[in-house]
Image 1 (cartoon, helix red, strand yellow):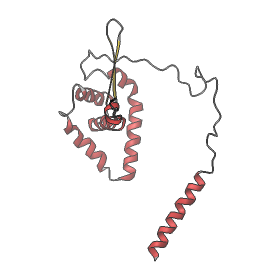
Image 2 (cartoon, one colour):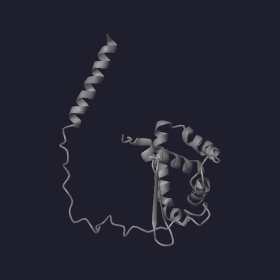
Image 3 (tube, one colour):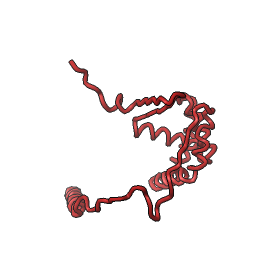
Length: 173
C-alpha cells in the first residue's frame, strides 16, 4: 500500500509542476525592431571572415581559425566536461575519452584525422576531446554539407546524410 501512495504522490507532484509551468503566457517578449545593423554594449564588431584553404595539408587547414577561436572552444569543452563530471564526479568518462578515442584514428575517412590532430595541437585540447566533438556533431546533426568554389567563381554544394537518413522520398508511381 505504501508503494501506491508514493506513486500517487509522484504523479500529483508532476501534475502540479505541469500546471505551474503553464502559468506564464506564451510569447511575452516584445518584438524587437531596428536591430540591424547591430549596436550597443554587447556588439563586438563585424563577424570575421575566414578562408579554409583546402590546398593546405589537412593538419594545417584549420590553423588560422583555431588560433583565434581556441579560447572560446576551450570554454565550450570545459563546460561540457564540467557537466559530465557533475553526473560522474570521478572524471572517468573524460579520462576514457582522452585515453581511448585517439585509438579510433585509422577508422575515419579522408583527411579528417590529420585535421583533428592539427586542431588539437593548435588549441592544446586533448585529441580525444576533439574527436568526441566531431563524432557527436555527426551523430546529432546527421547532416554534412560541403561548399566549394572553382577558379571561375562557380559554387558547388554537396549535402549528404540528412535526406538519406531522415527523409525517405516516396517514389511516384
